[in-house]
Image (cartoon, rainbow over all chains, first blue to last red; front, side, top):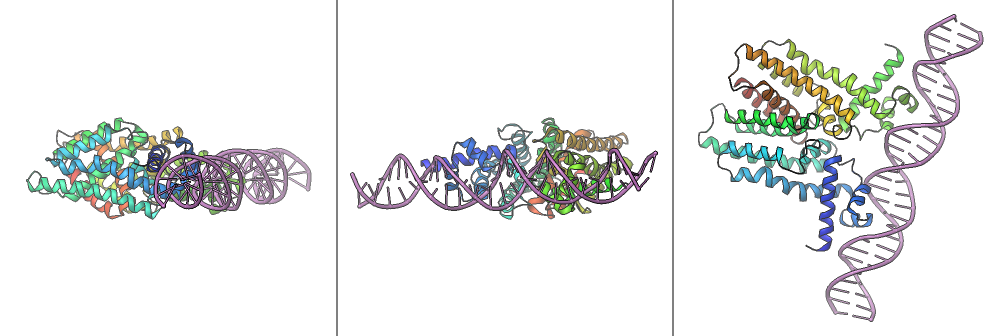
Length: 194
Length: 194
DNA sequence: TTGCCAACATACCAATTAGTATGTTATGTC
DNA sequence: GACATAACATACTAATTGGTATGTTGGCAA
């Protein structure tokens, strides 16, 4: 990677950390250039505007990261119930950027930016749709193997699962990590009873 | 109500609308006084700071409103499954301040303000806990009547329900109202299978 | 070695922010 | 009807915001 590309990626990553903890609008360019030790001229050489940086961040940092953790394991896993639960457990336990106090980077951005900026909304809804599709596909596979009861509708189950994740990430901000544990138990019962 | 109290409440209500659509930090005092037609002097006569207004808003507007819709019906209802579903249906369909684009006022504030301000966090977590307690109580009542299976743990079910609500409110911002419908169907199946 | 341009650096700017200082006016009490 | 105070109104400020205009420098091709 060239030095310029390094600088650009470094700005994106540090911005990601800041925005994760403070929110997009509350994170100023001045703060970004202060923590990156990059001057304003350099910042605006790499990015046309703040929003240009934000979009790049979604597509080049957030999206690939989410894909590896949320989608890839579902495509590879055999038992969909186990795969879905495992993904959720990983999301709620293992990651540096998944502090209960600060929630989920993707959920945060959806919350804050979807109503404010149509371009952000589009980029973020693409992410949600991909996860949705991956979960539905996994469930369909399980249904073909006659793993589930007849009342079962994959799209509805997927929506309950996805919503549960987004919600517990939100509740966790108010009530702390114990919410995660309780939710995971409830999810397990839900999934195994399908 | 005295005229001064009227002014105060009017400021709180209009601020609530603005903050609901734009977020707390993105809503400026200047914008509030512009839409309320109240001068800056009047605003700062009624509220010490912006945060003072925000807290008052949570306790005097948000909290009573939520209580009536989210908690009261649960205390009064007979069948907990029906009561919980009905509350959720109301939350996702009926209200002016519940536009899919803008999400849920309470969830929005938890998302934005919990990590930023401990006082906000406390006021908001009180709200979540109350809902949680009301749902658990309703479920316990149903369990006493032998309505549910033995694997059933009220706290875990409550967490799945609450998280589902918060999450679908988030997803709805990205994917629109159709998410609500799908979620409600999934929730109904979940609840009736308990 | 020279010329050129990518990759930065510095110094600024107008607009907006929360908040304050210092007014004026309405209203209830005696 | 005087007077005190509650309830506002006006004009300001320092700090911060995203963005720009105008520099400088390092490395590579000719």
